[in-house]
Length: 342
Image 1 (spheres, rainbow, N blue to C red):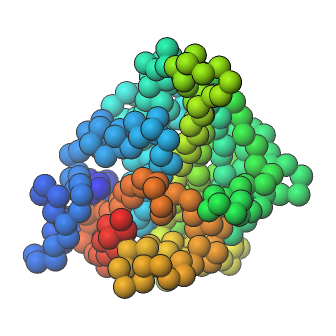
Image 2 (image 1 turned 180 degrees about the horizontal axis):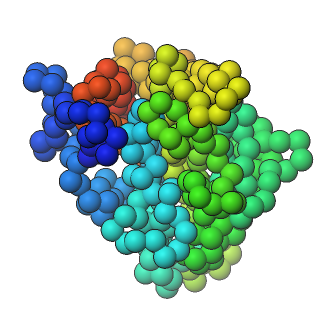
């Protein structure tokens, strides 16, 4: 997704260096990439959701795990696209991003299937900051001892210590998640942010909102009361921290440059680990070989959603400004590797 030029870039005299036409993206004069979808600066939030994310949400009701990731340089529009800046109820409809639309879609789907199944919905929020997992919904904190990841033995990952909150209604899950994901200007915000050269409110952690949908078939139960049919699906919404070259790093707080540098190194290492997993899954010559999920907490957490019968969408967000041409090319190359996963 190519965002529009922002005021700062216009004042600096930046010019657009990228264009989207159909599924193709052109950088400069002759660098072309082809994806499943390509969205230009004038794309509305509703269009992106209906074309790319809506069909994936529907597949959750068929028992598939679904993951939607937003990847890109800091300041490229990931948080706006994911909608984690407008989680609180009452936001402007046209500006609502993926997260609130997904939540609304899930409960509309449940309502339409009330006669066929009984549904139980739970939500979980995790933040991975400096390779340490934490977080909690509705102002709660993780269990004492922190959060750890364990392999269940069947390819699924169990998150030990994270709290799952029941969510019976749209408004309930919106309120639970608002405190964790709202960016800036909110006293209850618990996501790590700081000022960098490219973005005054740069996300310095990976945020993962997980919605677990459990459905018990009423039709099957009525035909055979001794057994029940249960489907469970996980839906991960992942707002990745923004990638950034360390030489571009600038903190707005004096004396904190070392901490910001350490954050940037950890962010880039996590994204590199994700890239290595994507390369292993997308390279036909390496099919069946070792996939390095254990290189970071991010890749371990997403292990059961990146391969197998799960359905995953990566939204690569880029700035059109010519001053960040190199970062834009790196993002598109990263996304091009992800496209090869089948």
